Length: 489
Ligand code: ADP
Image (cartoon, rainbow, N blue to C red):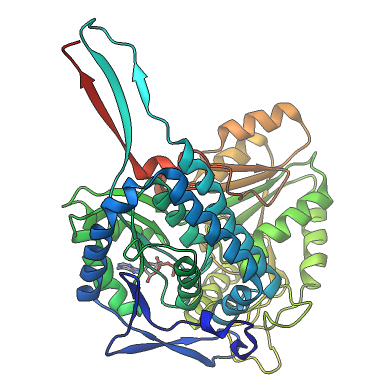
């Protein structure tokens, strides 16, 4: 699939340190999850190269932070336009290594690029403050300054957007970055880094350390242990988030964490059922269910339960599974066999405890495909003892639970250690307020299954993470407030 790139020079297999493409003695294979084909062999770096990248970033910091915000913004805007110009190629690279349907990949390129534009704009609005003085001989000032070298460890489910969402606010604020992309999707990261070079990013300001799963652990340790690195931003599993948090304790590093979710999707009796079904489809099955904001537990009120399940089942049964490059494919493969095994395990547990499979329930057979394809699945007759009620499924399985009252729905929805996204459908304005306020989540979608956009704060409460990305708030993690007391007036 990569032979068809319009600009083959976007296909990079070396890491980027201090403005140079660098190789390593070892390489690791990047595979197409739909076919199993090896797409490329990428440089496999370790702790020593990570140290070199951190040092390069530190050297680049003084000049980068000294630039006027408008000059940093100009580089980000140029990068933004380059992502759009090369959107077709970037989408191809993404579908090849990640598996999502090409239209979804193209959508992600636009979403990913939007953070570059947004933070290019926001970077020019990092205002300080003057505070009314309590002493006539003094004046109180608050300056906002870049925190310093930042590290970003990113996942494979959004290979471009999870990088730009972290890197754009850091760069706009005046911080250089060291990025460690997911081992499954380094090619998208490197293509985007190549475009950053073309946009005029100075050497050392943006570095990309590629590594396989084992070496990612060493790279992570080096990033966490460094006292030059002032901030670590991570998106991935709660389990790895906890490890990184622990590793960052000795250097008291600032942390932004976007971790797991267990999103409830509640449909009340008074909802527009067709709209709720549409919302459930995009929220649950986008990216084959592999997003941290995917509906994980669907709750339908008793009065509409059966009708909702039937309508959802009918739509899901029509979805086509296949290679993301084929037209009309609504769902690609899961990222790998391990992901498939986890879905099968959770499904097996639910069936053993009495769940009824309404559609799907098995691996999907795709002609020419060797990948981890799974049929989009709907389950009814599910209950709270099943693992699907507690664990993030990260696959195309929708368990639909039944509930009776509004209070019960809120209580069930909140009964989890996670708190990222939540969704509900209702037409009653009182209920909309009550439930929006009652859900212990960082984000609530009301009568919609799609909530993410660069202008709003994305993030979770409880064990779903720390901090917010995107929005006006997204830049705050990358600046320090420095108080200056001006005396002797
Ligand atoms: P996912 O469930 O999305 O695969 P992970 O949390 O396993 O999420 O991985 C997200 C990112 O974290 C990837 O870039 C991966 O290489 C990296 N990673 C995984 N384990 C560690 C670790 N122990 N230290 C540092 N990075 C890690």
